Length: 119
Image 1 (tube, rainbow, N blue to C red):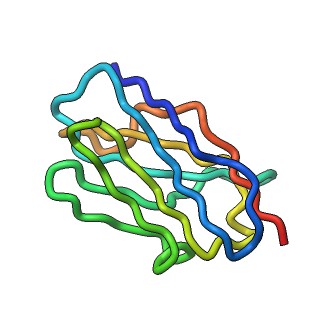
Image 2 (cartoon, rainbow, N blue to C red; image 1 turned 180 degrees about the vertical axis):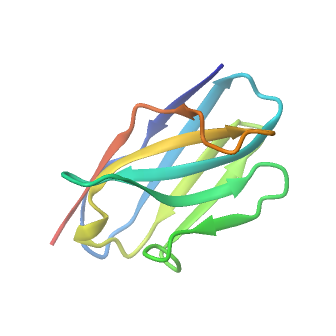
């Protein structure tokens, strides 16, 4: 079992930046990827970015490409999401998630951190 704890959310003006962190504890082996998802009020949860834990290859949703950067620190068992040029439509609860090796879906989730971008 993996426990995930997000931090770094807050209120920022449009055009500003925030850096989210997600610290993982518990099982640290056989991890395939970690990712970030978000859920805006009245909407479903959507994919934001993911990173392959072994080779560092990242993938992004089209809506955040060029503005967000996902990275990992294997020694600290932590994944980050650097968010630049934030827009009001980025306002959401951001969730960290983990996908084990051999599993096709993200099975462990954090409690979420609120990001609010004012116009």
